[in-house]
Amino acid sequence: MRINSWKIGVGLASMLLGMLLVFQFRTETNVKSYLPQFKTVSELAIKWNRLQTDLSKKEEELKSLRLQLQGYNPDEEVKSLRMAAGVTPLRGPGLEITLTDVQRKLKAYEDPNLFIVHYDQLELLVNELWAAGAEAISVNGERLVAQTGFSCAGTTILVGTKKLAPPYIIRALGDAKTLKAALMIPGGFVENQILPFELGITLEMKTSLYLPPYKGSSFFNYAQVVEEEEEPPVEMIVIEEEKEER
Image 1 (spheres, rainbow, N blue to C red):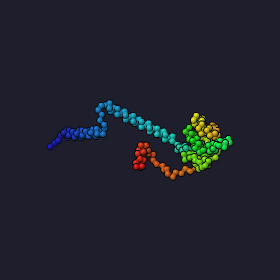
Image 2: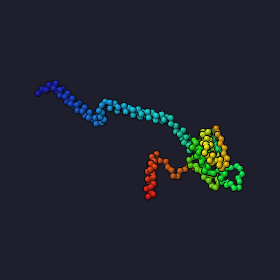
Image 3: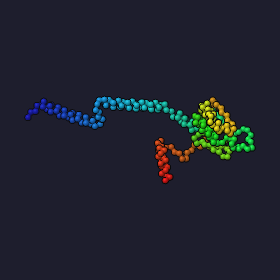
C-alpha cells in the first residue's frame, strides 16, 4: 500500500510537537519546585531589589577587604607588636618624674618608714600614667611590660627582680601635659601620696625621652596560644562554681 508523503510529514510534526509539550511541562514543573512563589509582580520586584542590595553590600565588603590586603604590611605589624611588647628601645616626648624620700632630718618621734617611697606608691604612680594614656614607661632604666610587677624586700623596692634605689626616675612617653595633669589633679596622686609624707617630687615635660628595651624573661609556662573563642556568661561561671562547691 502506498503511503502519501504528506501523511508522514504530519505524523512526524505531531510527534515532535508532543515531545516539545512534554519537555515544556517538565521544565515548568522543575522551575516552580525550585523558585519561590510570588502572588504579584510587586513581590517579585521587592525580592529582586533585596537580592541586588545584598549583592551590592557583598561587593563593597569584598572591595574593602581587597584594599586592606593591598595596604597590609607585615613588617609594620611586627614592628608595632614589638613596640607594644617592650622589646625595642623607644624615643619620644613625654613626662619625666623624679621621686625622693623626705629630705629633711626627721624628729625622734617620727617613724622613718612613713617618709620614704614605698613600692605601692610607685605602682600607683605607674597605673595613673597608664590610665592617662602613657604609651611606654620605664623606672630607673627598667622598661615596664605586662609581666612587670612591683614588690619590696624590707625597705628595698623591686621592679620584677631588679632592685631599685632612690631617687626613682620614672619616664613615660605620651602627651606630657595630659600625663602631668592626671598626677596633679585635686585629690590625685601628688595630693594623696606625696604631700602628706613630705616626699620629694619633680615633674618635667620633655620633648625627647629615651626608654631602653625590656630585657627580662618572656617565657610562658602555663599560657598557650589557642583559637579565639567566646567566653561563657558570668552567670554560667557562677553556677558552675556553686556546683563544684556542693
